[in-house]
Length: 270
Ligand code: KIV
Image 1 (cartoon, rainbow, N blue to C red):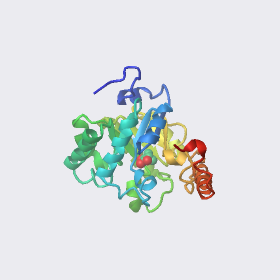
Image 2: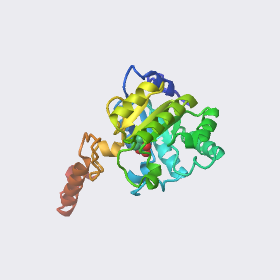
Image 3: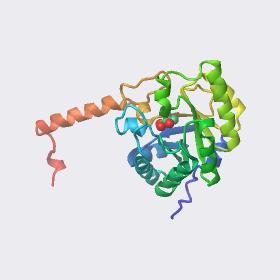
């Protein structure tokens, strides 16, 4: 393996050490070309999220994506990335049922993709799976709050943990994940005040999506922040570009040029 000595790679330890010192930036990526640009933009961490099921494959939920498909996306991202930490989601059904299956799934991701860590959803319910993966030396990122793999249990994508009971469970789960040794924790779509309380009470960095400004870092789905998923506009999303319009406009101009024999011109032929 060749190592580029000029670029200092971000590790799970770098991410841990950023708590309280510097905010952590994370975006998703699922393919080589976008991952290359995201990495060049100076992102700290890239999540190969199971949101690939939605934005890459067009499924309504994250449930259908398979381990093989996640590994394919992760391989493409890893080939592109020179600096960022690459974390890969364990897809639905590959870690909840039994700890050995969870470890086997995580090992496949690490061996076959070359990624640096895995992420999984849940707290107490998946404690044994987390322990088993960590015991094998694989870094784990947690994910609490609106965990999309449980969408059929929630029945809605609305804000989670607004009520005291669910907020207390989330806090307990955050403490548990911290004590187990996960290196960071994603919190999705929960009240900002709760996210602040968790952030102040755990030793690991929290990374929020729709969880307010007090988390130790922020994550967005890259297609959403680039404005490619034009119908998805939740309150928490900041769109930095409107690529849906830019790309459809470019396609329209290309179609016109082809129809009018304006493309290719003199300099665009051999
Ligand atoms: O799959 C994903 O993109 C995620 C983020 C929303 C955190 O889990």
